[in-house]
Image (tube, rainbow, N blue to C red; front, side, top):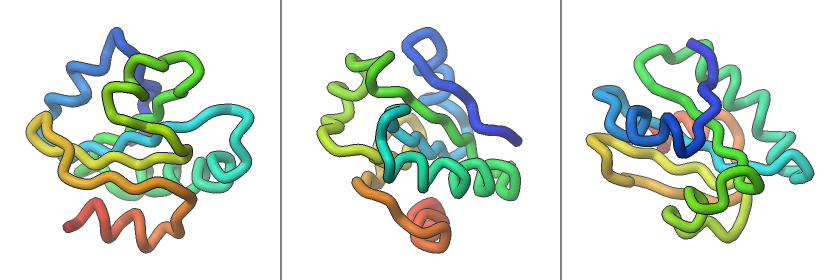
Length: 102
């Protein structure tokens, strides 16, 4: 499965997925976000049991505010429409997978 571009038009559908959801809040100008992007892509391709979405904070400031995102990259894990984990900063693949599996 590939990464889904999330914005206010499809957010509710993604949020309420029956699968566990990983949201990557990022910006095109953010260096650490560029480091995390290929890792997020790999996780999406290798783990179809999850829904993986990316939210551009410059294009979707209302979603960033809803999640209290003040630092990017910011990874949010949701299940059943609720946030179950959230972490800011670039992380290695193993750490992101561990967060998803907890």
